Length: 78
Image (cartoon, rainbow, N blue to C red):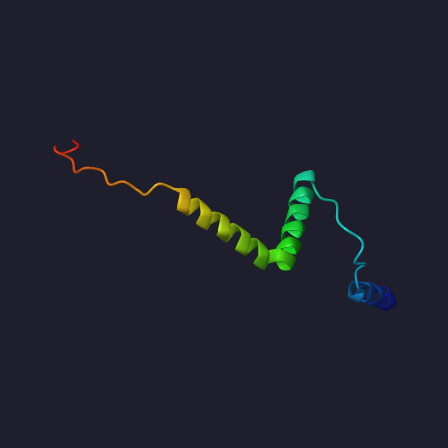
């Protein structure tokens, strides 16, 4: 009896197999795939992506018309 209890305890301390993955719903698998892809891309190319999108924003800001001020209201709105 004691030997059986010790055997169960020993099994709890074994390292899990890192290549055994749990079953996931399709949506969870797709979300995990997207997360890992984004994480890898951000880690590897994050600075370059930042520079690229910043340059796009600056170009768009140069071509955007200046904001216009609305004339003051002559009457109260309500």
